[in-house]
Image 1 (cartoon, rainbow, N blue to C red):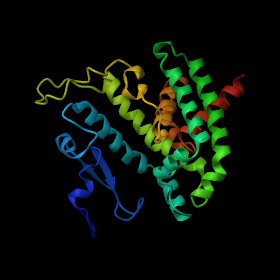
Image 2 (image 1 turned 90 degrees about the horizontal axis):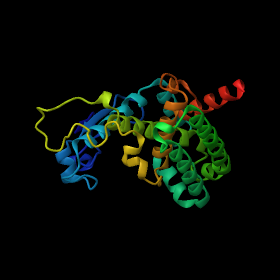
Image 3 (image 1 turned 90 degrees about the vertical axis):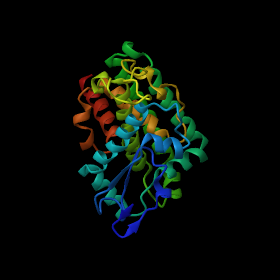
Image 4 (image 1 turned 120 degrees about the vertical axis):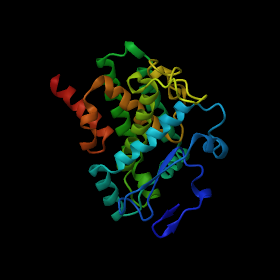
Length: 272
């Protein structure tokens, strides 16, 4: 691929996960390129794919990656990225992952947050609004304590960058995209019949459709070093129950998903 003055050989992008945006200069200096990898190519080149990988997974991950373009082109996100890039190095995911590995208490707290959110969602149809709100309220208290406890150490290790800002940023970017990806699998309204599609790997989402959260592979996974994926996804699923209109407002909130939960808990305090 030739990107303006730069050349990107195939070996550099042959393992991109279905789709990936490339910028040659940096955030929002130019429009990104979106590279799409076919499933057959990923099976040959990527260790995460094999002959048993269904097309539905390719589709859901494609939606995940394409959703990033919508996020990154939104003015609230672009303003954040540009402002943070001006004031110092932009904190990449690997910085959060390294911090997670290094600090046992941070890791334990994140895992506790994940189990708390997960326990509520595994109730399935029995999960009511009250329980969803209570869970998010409790999560926010634990989350704020984690951020407060580790902000100083994270800043020292990352050129005085803010843990609160970048934890919330990556939770929103990757966690919300994981939520969208998951909805593609389980929400039948997004599916279409494809009887004439010549694809032995495609079965019209029968393994996921209508099964809800408990039918997702993510429902049985541990949180792990990329915790911001799991925490963000679970918060989004709970917001569906606790505050059904959240999607129309989340991009306008400071720190996005965290801001939505803060608004929700504040509203609950005012009404009681």
